[in-house]
Image (cartoon, rainbow, N blue to C red; front, side, top):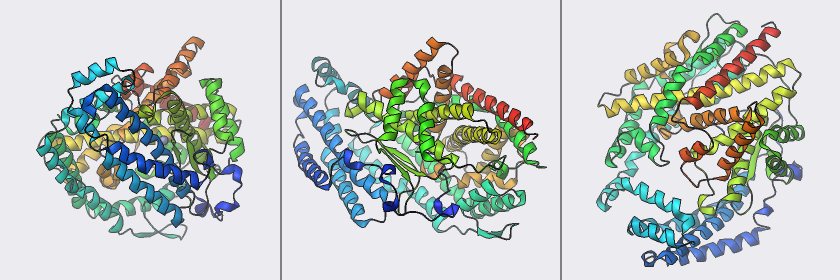
Length: 620
Ligand SMILES: [Zn+2]
């Protein structure tokens, strides 16, 4: 996935959007690699239905010994693989044209079966956990059939440390409906009940300033007053209900703290990171090292202020392009560049990327009814498929490089891991995608002779670091401070949250950006804070890991480069077979140390220096 989806569509660029049948078959994915036809899908669906009952019949057998346990794990894997194919065949078909009711019905049919599969397997973990761990360890040592499940089993027992007794778990499940209330109320307040205002721009155009319109004005209007109007109009919607937003966010923090304490965690952060066994020092170190590395970020804003010729530089001046540039990128050309750009990862990796581009594994262009955005779908037992809405822009080109990284991760993980470890955690997922983007940028910078294109590429790469790294760290910083208010029994008010946010803007941007009073309400606009606490920091840690890995790949020494490639490919091949910190450590990345963050800071510094040079040559 990508963090910020491009809002440019055929509709926005004025072109008529094509219907799916008007698009050449070469540019549409071929799902026959999953099932040759619906009859084959139907047959697998029926098999899955029968096997769900067979699996449920194993209940009560696990304690009888290693053979029974291995058999149950084996059958669980078979069911999972079958479910993967049955699900993706219907779900990818549906995404081709989401107006298709028949496909939607088939997809829902699978969802119902998967829910039944979940219910029919719910006995498994509790029954296993009733067997003493020492007994199971003895079985693991003795049984080659069971041995592959060692990590999955050990992890299950580890997580058991924070599972309550039956009465406690019952209370937690009874409270789960309440737990979602602050987020539900946030969604209603910020969308259904939000009253966005109209503003008239200097062009005479009158627009209703919803978030997409706000982004459009900030990204396209060369008139600073227009950008300010859009900024103030959008944020006024949040300011008008600021006490309600603060109460809702306070409830999010209270809920997290309740759940953490109920399960015996030291803090909300501790609870949020335990699933992947990440130490809290990773987030604390991430924040401290990024705050210490704010200098190149401020230099970039000062450069922008100078180039854009602005008297004062504000939050709403951060994304307007530095130069006008309207080049389009034709898909067949881009495929060649994407293949060429991964040469540093070796001929085998490069051949796999080429194969991905040549066999109709990618659904390229947008069409009426097609799902928006982009993704890479991992279909175990087949191969990954990439959905794009390719529209010839530079954003779309980088999105393709990004999704190709996910696809390669899936291919290598699926080829080297059994089903139980085939999927990887979000904590490592954005490493190959951002690394592919970094390689692609290097390649594009090396091949272009157009100075405006160089500037656009550099701005794209810098904005990427700002948006995917600095902004996400600042968000994690905010979440940590707000949760700590609650953990220390301090009041959470609109003033208190505003003070945290103002402090952050000063800490990261310093005097490079003029701080408007309205910017202090920005926290109320960020849905992640309400919907996915302590989640987005993972984009930043992935980014830092990538920066560290790229150092190895760009090394002067051939031996060091070879070593870096081998370690990186081993990381991709390891799928979800270990804890992410251990996987990354083997690849040479230690997120408990400031090194990876320093690699991002240095990379930003390098790119800003290059951009300053380009602007000076252009006479900017
Ligand atoms: Zn992604």
